[in-house]
Length: 223
Image (cartoon, rainbow, N blue to C red; front, side):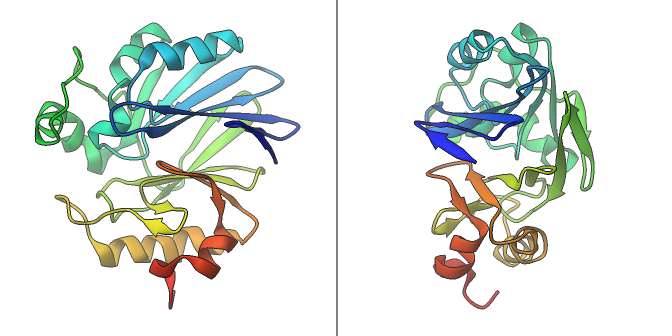
């Protein structure tokens, strides 16, 4: 997997990272290089920027997927849902976060978008979302939120962890629905077994690998 200024990929898969929204969330556009079918992961804001990137690459967006329901990861959901004609997917356990999007924005002092995000598909552990010849497998990794998920590209040794796991850190658990014990169990049971050579694309900060986090992440000591 090569990388160059936010652009990653392999022979069959392309990944573009964009930092968007008020908290600089990592939004990822992932596509099948042969069919140009794509998914958008965590469009936290700046819908026009995300849409322009997808259109400039000639991509057809099949799914908009949220790793969890916090406002900084879902802010451009509804706008892109209509402009790109793609459904929004999120775990059912984070449905309440979408329904309270405006309250979340107010809590963090951010202006709400014109349209409140709404889900078209509720994803669950083990579900696969296809786009072209690629598929994302859903791993339910609660702890940061009840419905937090990690997304694994089958066959590519790549995961998108949202706010479950970062380079050198883990997601906060002091917000409603958070649980430190649950988060650690998610990382131990769902992420570490994937293998040290798996690339980790987190919701904030730089990419890393499972192996690097296993060896040096202070929050994972003893797992």
